[in-house]
Structures are given as C-alpha cells and as structure tokens.
Length: 555
Image 1: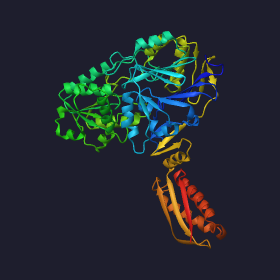
Image 2 (image 1 turned 180 degrees about the vertical axis):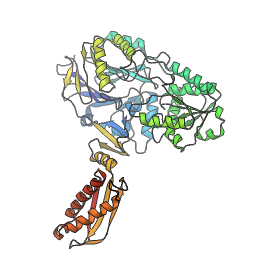
Image 3 (image 1 turned 30 degrees about the vertical axis):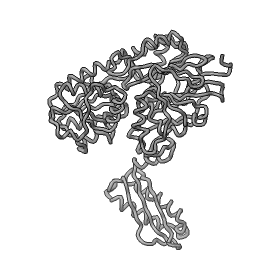
Image 4 (image 1 turned 60 degrees about the vertical axis):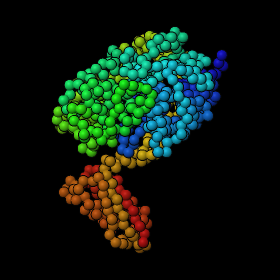
C-alpha cells in the first residue's frame, strides 16, 4: 500500500490550451521523491506572424531539473505534434523512449535522420503490450486514428489507473492497422478507472466521425471519373489515405508519382512495416513528364500551404509537376487553423490555372482522426472514470469538454492548462502549485526561449523597416568623408513628396552640425542624437518610426 504522502499527479507541459505541442508528465511518489514518465513530446507549427520561427516546442525546464527521476518518454503515435520535439529535447532529458514500430520508423527516417540529431535509445513496443517503468505499468491499447499504430495508454499505479487517450476515433474500417480495441476498453472500465485524460479536438461536433472506408470510396469515384491528370494532396503520415489513393489509381489505370520527400519517407516506413501489401510501387518525380495525362496520379505534400512543400512549388511553377485545364486536384485533408490563408492561395492559384479543385467542402474526401461527441460519449460509458481532465484542445474545447463530462456524470471534472499540476490520488483531486513551463522556438538550427528579444525585434523590423547609418569623426569631432546610409523596408517617398533618403540625409547633417564639438567627440552621444533625429524625421513624413542603427567611427 502507498504511504500517506505518496500521490499520483498529472502535469501537462503542452497540448492543454492549444492543439499541438503535446507533452504530459505523470508522476508518482511523495513530493521531492516522485518518479515521472513523459507521454509524448511534440511540436506545434509556427504561424506567419512569427518570422523566422520554424517549430514551437514545450519547455522541459521542470523535468530537465528532475531528469534523474524521469523513467522514460512514452509515445502514443507518430504524428509530429506528439513526437516532433524528441530530437531537439532528448539531449536535455536523456532517458529511454518507447515507441511502436511505425513510430520508431518515422522517427528514424525524419527527425533523427537530420544532421546533428542525437542517438536516441528507442525501445520498440507493440499495440496490446505492457511496460513496467518504476511504479507505472503502461498498457498500449490499439486505437483507430489517421496514422498506424495509435495507442491509448492505460497507466496503472498503486492508487489507481489513469487512461491517457492519445488521439483516437471509433472506426470499424480504418483502412489499415487495428481498429479501436473496444472489448479491451470495456474490460479496463470494468477493472476501474481513476482518471481519464481525453482528446477534445472534435468535442464541438455532434455525432461520429466518418470512416476512412467512406473517404476511400469517394476518392475512388473521383479518380475514376477524372479525364486529365489527377493530383491528391494529404498528410504524408496518413498511410490509410495514401494506400486508398494508390489502390484507386491502380483501378483507374494510373501510375502514382510521388512529389515530396515526406511522402516518400512515410511510404517507405509503411512498406517496411507491412502496411502496403498489394499496393504497387510508386514512381519518382522524373516519371511525370513521360506519362500521358490519363495515366498519371500525383501524390503531393503541402496540403497545409507550406512554402517549401510540393503544392506551393507547383503553383509557383518551380516544380516538375504542371497542372492545367481538364486536370483535377483533390485536397484530401483539413486545413489546420492558422493555415487558411496559405491553403486558400494555393486553391485559388489552381483554379486560375483552369484546374478542377475538390476539397472537403465539396465532397467527403477527408475525415478527421479525432472523435466527435458521440464517440467521446461511448468512451466515457465504457471507462466510467471518477475524474475527467479534458486535454488536446484550445480553451474553448477544454471548457465544452468539461461541461460534457459533467453531463456524463463524472464525479470530479478538472480543467487544466499547461503548467498546472493536478493531484489525481489517493485523496480528492485538485490543483497543486504549478510548475515551470512555456514555449521554445526552433529558429533555424537554434532553440530559443519565447522571451528572446530577437523575436520582438523582428516584429518591429517587419512593421517599420530599418535605417543603417555609418560615419567617421576625428578626435576634434569633425566629420570625415561622406556618411554611408542604407534603408530596408521603407517607402521611397514620404507624405510631402520628398524622397526619404533626402529626409534622412537632412536629419543626419542638421544633427551633426548642431551638436557642440564636445558632444561630437563622444561617439555614443553622437550616435544617440542622430538616431533620435532620424527616427523623428522619418515619422514626420511617413507616420511610422523605423529601427535606426547608427555607427560612429573615430579616426
């Protein structure tokens, strides 16, 4: 029996308050002596209002400080928002990682294949297996999702079982892999569930999510009826969808050409794991130009409008794939919130080129991998948890899910956000003092704090440009030679019609002429005076204050 001081805690570092960046700590033991496991370690994708940022990662400061007590990182599935931070953060944590074969394969060919990636020790676990890590016994229960080998985790501890749902849905015909193991979920519910930490992504939607089998049928119909070239763009990790497209192409007498390295890697791993039996080999991009229009189908990356992915390059004309009148482009994906503008630009560009575009608004060419309210209701009925903590969602999703859990009769419903620490047992659940948390930004090859001043500076540069001025002064404070001035991001002329270069020059010379010799002999004083004068002069004729950088050299 556990001592009175030992308790089970849940502490999310990411994924509660946003969709993405999933990372959840579970701890057991007395304060200061707890052992932890980290469930998932994912990224979120930066929006266009974050110049220079590639990825957003959870800040592991709390568990890094306690890493001697971290028993392992346990992955529910291979989506980037659950595994994408492993390569960047593992050197700070240095513990074993546990993943299914497909998740391991994608990690090894993607994040862990990048230059400079660490050698992460990954132990492969199977759906249906169990793993003992200190006080935690973890069972990997098969769940349907939009990627193979997704798992719900039944985490057994001395004070009760916590069910961490991961990403899931109910789908009797998921296209490949195992469907949700409903029988096992019912058995776990009969054993008794202390707490359920559950996916909230589609809690705002009534009913149940459509099946992959229905999507596969619609795709088959669309591809079969097409007269010209066909292009399908979808998430590279959705192997069931890729398989359905390949089989539909085969039935229509088309050969599949891959456009995008991520698609190639995903299919290679899927084939190695045995998920593509009966699916013909795909062709490389070079085959596109030699295949007749009626005999080709392109599978392309970039369904979210990523600038460097195939779809964006295709509409820019910077790609081997060319589409035009009589061709068909199918967006077999949902647009992730924040990507609407980029995706819309691609759709509009294709339409202007005469391409027939089909999206999820036109036909059932995509279905979510997450449960709608009807499916969540069934999970609650099977598991009958004493405690519910909504997860994997924005604040609205979490609030609605909490209300729904109360309607389902759950005794204790706790709304938590990143950085909270929740006591789950053995006593009544509730909030404990929070933990260090936050976001890290991947900026090129460097990981920076979200508080780094460079991001604030970039926003200012993006809004008002920069003026760079350099001049030389002798020891008497006299100007030597001609000052050098360069502007970036400023308009050519101001409100009064004067060239901004002339406005800047006048402010520079007037300031230097008016400064006493004693002040001009101090380069710092001269620089500050010129900076203020130039900024004010530009603001007077433009209405914005640029960044002004001034360098004075003593000669």
